[in-house]
Length: 390
Image (cartoon, rainbow, N blue to C red; front, top):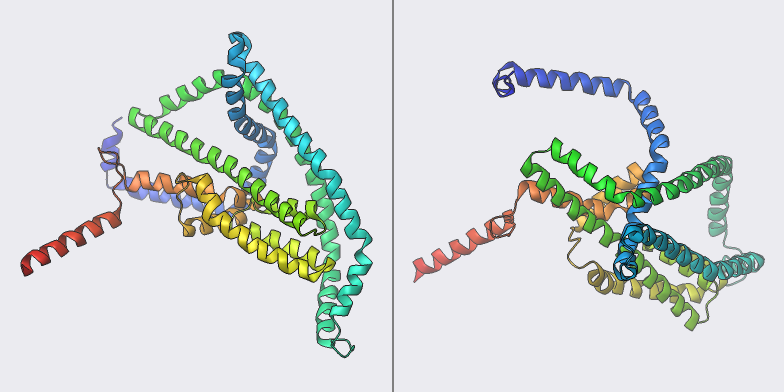
């Protein structure tokens, strides 16, 4: 059967359009069933996905250990297995050290905050009073209204917390299984890679396979650089915040610095959320601390945006602000926190794919963009006008 001749037939595009319409109608009509099916698939594949993610993140550490430590032992048969074991040991030690350093300070901060809650309430009540000592009724009514609305939401909030608690249990179980699977994925990496390469080589033609492999290499570089640089950036911001608070002898240093560092992982909106939480806690303790904290946050975020990020990320993730904002909104709507965290690398990958499709590189390795053609034509036109005037 000659498929090229079939494509040239007049009835072919109408048949494809009709089949696509029927398929779309079927999907819309059975969207609930499909949603349940995909939820079941996700529950089934969740441990495997977690295992792949953990293996992907630990793999660079294992390669570093193999190159700089294990290779010197001249034990080629067990080099990779020993490297994987040492990589997981290193990751475990780092996590234990961080927990051991942060947990006592966090417990102290939370305990102090809870013990002084009555004092914070009294200070807040004093702020509600007018200069003559009378109560500001407008502010009081606003706060009471907000509290009443909060009471209405408490049953739903309690139910949500309970359901999320069971989800946390499932997540921990998936993480445990994923951790075990990650070890096996890494140990069998050298067996899995040839299989995958062979499958894609059979599915794709020569040029398509080469482009696909280049895309995979590019995506890998983008993701690894983004993850490592984002973690380092969050650590720098959190540590800077802790040093600043220690210098001014502010309370809740560990608690607020941890919140600032973790929320800094989320692009665009994360630092704002961290700043609001930190200001609220410090405002209850001493309002002037909240002002100092706000000023420092503005300074450190400016330095982060114009110095730290450009130095860390370089030109690897040269994504426009519009792309990033669209990716954050769409990622957050579809995948929640995970979608927000991965919005920037996803936007970078999509931009790279579109550039490869629409503006492929020329023989000299330069990618010709449409605005370059426009500026070149404008420059040539200006030169022609100057020559005519002369």
